[in-house]
Amino acid sequence: MLYIIRHGKTDWNEQHKLQGQTDIPLNEEGRQMARAAAEEYRDVHFDVCFCSPLVRARETAEILLEGRDVPIIPDERLKEMCFGEYEGMAYSFEVPNCPINALFLHPEDYTDPPGGAESFESLFARTGDLLEKEVRPLLDEGKAVLIVGHGAMNSSIVCQVKNIPVKDFWSAGIENCKLKRLI
Image (cartoon, rainbow, N blue to C red; front, side):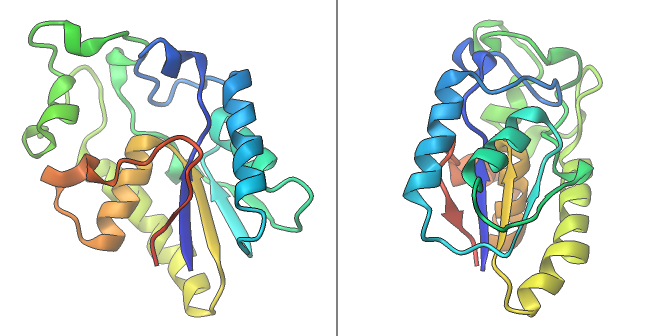
């Protein structure tokens, strides 16, 4: 089985800032969310956990799996999508004609990433590589795999596993610290 979960809240989530690959830690509410998820999902079996190396995902994985004998493997391919010069920007939707908004409002039109932001092609390539080389062999062995990551990065995995087109990229709606079973 394949499960996916998004990290707990951060101060930047609260401030509606684009985080991307900026390494922002969980805030206390985020830690509490991870503790609540640990309790809620304590009976769900995991054999291995792959997580983003960014601290908010890593800390979520550590809290979620505390006291369990589940290896946590950080992997660079699971970093959040890079938003380039827009990382740290608050309330981008209030900025008229802000080019990064196409990513969120019309993902099918997000073809020429602005300001050093990452393309869907790049995001899908790196997360797809992890799925193919690391996750699929474990699933074929009957292992239960958990991925702890981020909103856009997790959505790229959901789209690939469920064959969802890019125009529906955000349809997965992965909330903070809510476990989703994919396979």
